[in-house]
Figure (cartoon, rainbow, N blue to C red):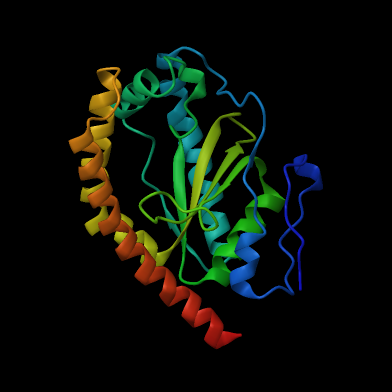
Length: 232
């Protein structure tokens, strides 16, 4: 039985996932970690937002190359909107523009777990990764799963976010679950804006919405797990 796991270590010591593990188990070997004091190269929002468009072009090229090398599909939504960026800085980042790490972002979508792991291995080996969040091992409250990487781009020195998705899970996220997510975010942001805890009725509504999402994601996750059991 393989018990190897990743720990939070310097990036030059990071190695790709052990390939003699059963495929579903290989995802569990990826631990969460994050470098200390990750900051964008600009503290003033206007400078940060202006330079982000060049960093987005740099990231797009990297994601396209990574997806091509690993039989995946690149999703390039462009940089976060000015309104959403400023809202997140105000409500979640205590006014610190340099802490906004998903202004420049993109995604890689895989049709199976093997290809997703291949994309992860490629990015770990060929980019300056400074943070990993594995939500396959620890899904969100709604049941959503992905891997989120923070990387430092070599030319612009921007911190950018790359999300690694499985296709069927991404389809739910961008489809029926998106409206559920927006309803939850609206409730939580309203309470945060008013500097208060959630009311009991708000908590109950969020719980019901998350249960709907959990059912959707659990059914699709079982599909992937079942396919991998058949292939092993």
